[in-house]
Length: 306
Image 1 (cartoon, one colour):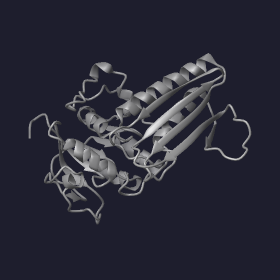
Image 2 (cartoon, helix red, strand yellow):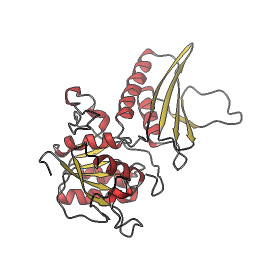
Image 3 (tube, one colour):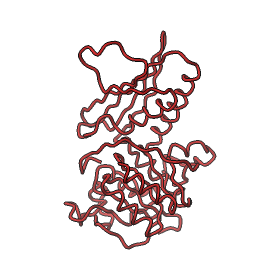
Image 4 (cartoon, one colour):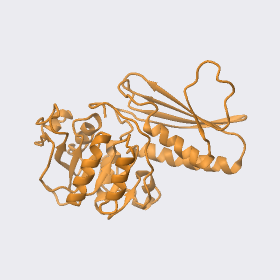
């Protein structure tokens, strides 16, 4: 293995997103190597080759519930109930951790916050680069509208595949939190029917569409009197909100940090460090600014649909 190659442990490797991380890392064009593929003990796919599950052919790494080989970074795409265990394992092994699992409760957030005092942790509701750039744009637009004054109605429409169980998506709720932080709305409307009356000014509307194999699309609509604009971000070619490419690009820089808990979105504010090249997916990493990671709304997807 070349000295520049990162050794990765994927937690939740048999899930939907875990398989995509494995597939991306298994590509000959990238400098990452999967050294362990983790799932809970007794998982129906335990013992299977992680590369084969991901559609890449055998990579010589079987799905298991533990690992003993050296590693550089752990990527977690599992379920909320499994997060505390992998956090504790990373602390015990002094390994950086990328937490991409959503739907976490207070218990998991506390465990991550405590662990971040000892190891580098990156946490985000979406590891997609496009989604995180869009979050930055939405935050800036909301702040500008708040300063300008006047009424602005905000509606968030998200579309996902038929298998997604939670509505709205964690990413949609994060967009809403960014709007609310800047503009101060206190109410949320999840779809509308019947005669609810005129739309209150102090409200963010959420609308969830589930159809086909849509990997993920979010539209944030800002409506004023006489004009409107929207921020739209969509995944293509099976990209999805998880963004395995963005997840992998975060690992190189994560290995170099010490005792920080950060958000992928925060990294975008140091453009001199944004040197990754999509055609080759080289692990150059994004800029990193330490900041508390925001809590993510609780939502879950059934095993196998992560």
